[in-house]
Length: 341
Ligand code: NAD
Ligand code: UFG
Image (tube, rainbow, N blue to C red):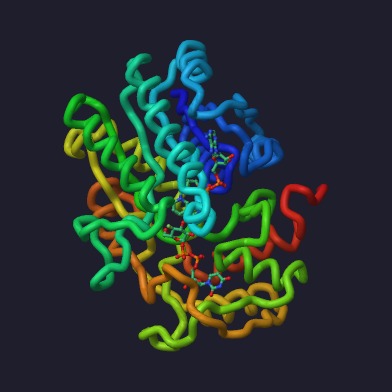
């Protein structure tokens, strides 16, 4: 069965292609390469022995999408394509709404025209804003503090409205917590273009000697050690969640529209992550505690039990594996996909 994977050359998309192939699906990747490289797909071939069909295209291009839907018999779409840097979204809101929201609307329109009615959407824990309590269940109120989060909430709403108009569509809204880690081969992983915004690529950049020291954003949060707590989830566990979400479309007891958290249910502080990475890499991670980063919250972790009940998915890997795998990727490829093997 052909699965159209928008954004499939990216970090989560490339890992998901491996799991799709492993489960017998055929990914067809559609990506404009604005934040990725086809080398990731070459590496997927190296890992799986299978070539992936790749189409360079933008999800805002209706004609290009119609062409793909005409050419291939698509069973379902996994929609990763989007911009994801929170700070950049504050500076360039129109770019984010255009790319993420307009792109999604164009994609869903092409699906409707071409009678493709199954879609999995990459949402984010950011839609919970600053939660009143933890762990977070799917029925918590949603809110937004930046255009990136705003774009995710709008797209969720668009899909909920599509469900009202077309109750026969199968729609999965997957709310990811903090994806980290890399494939155990060390051949693919996260490869930020610029100075990383996120914790894990920053720590691994310090360990490999690319970055001088980590700034820990705030040491005075109401958490056990004063630093921010998050639910880090291994990207391969996350990728497997997409296969489970696809399989659940065939389960008559699962509603045609559903929302699930993909997290581990455990929170780790920044200092705990630094210690785990130090253990993985055997390198000192120089850091200093600085001011809080605007918009950050103290603590965020999932209640992932609904995903277990509904789609039979749960995370299996802990933070030490996440750090070991990140280090294997980073130390083998200090400059990401620019490092030749
Ligand atoms: P990524 O940047 O590595 O992958 C996104 C891919 O989409 C890239 O390959 C990029 O080139 C492509 N793309 C962007 N705009 C496009 C467009 N208009 N047309 C076609 N392709 C386009 O990011 P990722 O970490 O793999 O994230 C995948 C999805 O998951 C995104 O929607 C992101 O918002 C969401 N998400 C990510 C995180 C995270 O921390 N990584 C957390 C929650 C949700
Ligand atoms: N942090 C630092 N120093 C850094 C980077 C991060 O101390 O250089 C801290 C943050 O303050 C936070 C924790 O590390 O306490 C994690 O920060 P990340 O930037 O890695 O992740 P966030 O939880 O802030 O946000 C991520 C994604 C968002 C997504 C959200 C929920 O970047 O896109 O998870 O899924 F919306």
